[in-house]
Image (cartoon, rainbow, N blue to C red; front, top):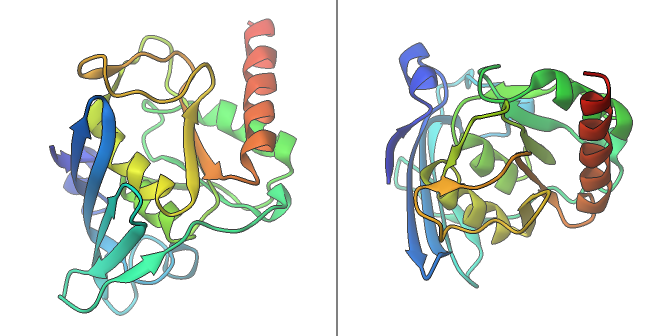
Length: 216
């Protein structure tokens, strides 16, 4: 449980999430994201703040059961799917709002390699996973600075919400595992997209990291 995921977003009155995940043998089998400030319409249409104040989404997923979004006003849940975009030039991507949480310069280099034309959407918390699961954007890049250790509660619920919506969340060096305690042991971050774009994104991230390392 992460009771307030995206503390700085919460304090600013922007995006945050209440994130809950159930682990069974290191595998996420259930995930719930309550995103009180997330507009009910796509972020690409409304931005972070809904013009008609229709905000508040609950995303939930169970292994093999798909991902659903339900407005917090209690109306019916609908099944959601990640973006079907195959051309990276048409893709938009999410990244962390805080520059301290993710390397924005590296994200920019990756976007350039892919030919992404839209500017990045920077929001706090696992609300990004929820927005991605319903197709608001096609890519999420979480590329932390050296020495930063990712915690499992910052990604567990979001990963199953995206994967059950047809997406893929992975690290460069291995599949994401939640069986080593409270930290995810990774050096190069997490990349999330649909299954068609993942090979292109994976290669662009790997090449960009190598270029950045060789320039130091």
